[in-house]
Image 1 (cartoon, rainbow, N blue to C red):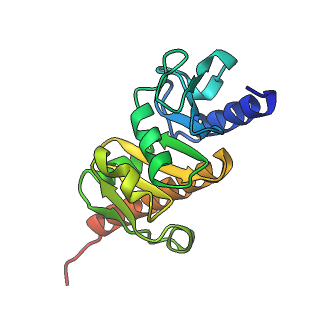
Image 2 (cartoon, one colour):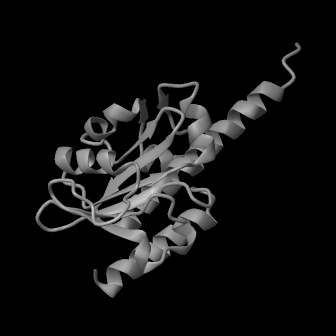
Image 3 (spheres, rainbow, N blue to C red):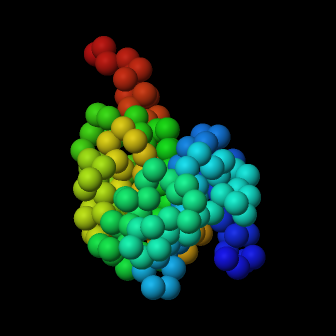
Amino acid sequence: MSRERWKEFRAVGRMLWEAGLVSSHGGNMSVRLPGAGLLITRTGAMLGRIGEGDLVPVAADGTPDGEPSMDTGVHRAVYSATDAGVVIHAHPRHAIAISLVADALEPADAEGKLRLGSVPVVEAEQVAQALREVPIVMARGHGSYARGDDLWQALQWTSVLEESAEVVWLLRTIAGTQDRSP
């Protein structure tokens, strides 16, 4: 593993944690390796402080060299279904809450409308197929999965998703507290 790749994992993981997009030990990230293998964070890794030992190579046949994330199968399915270079799985709180009551997140803010459009909410086994059509999806009640060319791009999708979800949440809160008397 190159020092630059580790530094990218470390920087993006730190930003995910600082932005509240993952909990102390939640979420995972991976990059596609030449030959159809991948490099993924280990199970239980703290994305906010990734060490070199937190990255696990997984061969093209699925054989890991360590304890990869429990979501390795989802990441492998995304790489098989798309041309993604990376996958980030995060736990954005507002987006998760909305995924429990809606079949899609419909951004109300300008950036969300422009960058995301409608974000589907799918069951975990549908993530890879859904990511063929859009760059980010929500697994109902579980979190987001973003694909990208690099970790920075997938971080951007994740960040825009949560900002849009928070705006939707705030709008619903405001609408619910409005005095509706004539």
